[in-house]
Image (cartoon, rainbow, N blue to C red; front, top):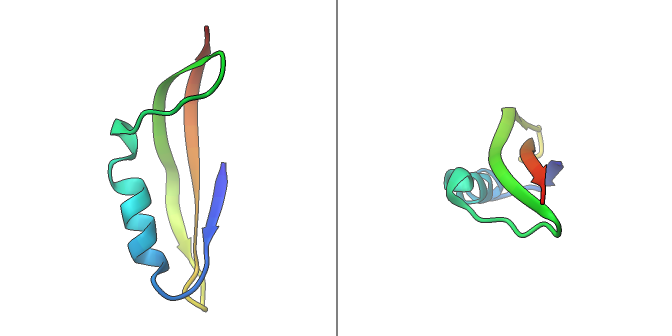
Length: 61
């Protein structure tokens, strides 16, 4: 999944969203989430936005 957080405060929001990501529980119907990571480094845009990708390893129940 790819995300983009716009403008002022984007870095702080990114830090809060991804800080405990590996400990977060996700509910995906008929799937077990085995692992979640931020894929690669975030992209910082000129107007302050931050873009990033999250990868999840899932196993079908």
